[in-house]
Image (cartoon, rainbow, N blue to C red; front, side, top):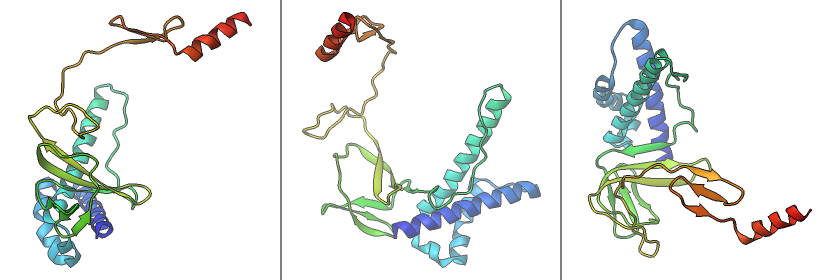
Length: 213
């Protein structure tokens, strides 16, 4: 079901991209809202899309719209003198479209070590750390060897210190200052704020042998 959902989303992405290219050549206007509104008609014309959660399909339209937005932004930056490639959105191959997203709902973490996904069902999930805060989105990605990973986007106002024994981590973004690092001979590392890190013992011994030689 995961592979089937991924393939259907990839086909929808390519079809929406083709529609935008054709609309541009024909002088018509197609945007995210219009393509999103056409999804019910697509599901009626192609019944297999009834097996994909509606918000997952809407995310496909949003993903393409974001790719277009990035393209026009880079075009403008290139006009302003920035040395970059514009990169028009490309059609996705089987390996080029490897994730789906539940942007708001349609998923639920169960107490039996599984996760429930709308239109897919229960899947066993190995969580490597507890989740703190309100889950906003869920993305499922297939890697190059066929393994699947789930990434949660959460919103939290609480601060958690990183602790491997408890699995908590610091989710608050602390302001930081840039630090310059210099690699030297007398000190292995010297930072711009005056911290010096000496080389390990085996490197100092090697340096003495080289000097004798």
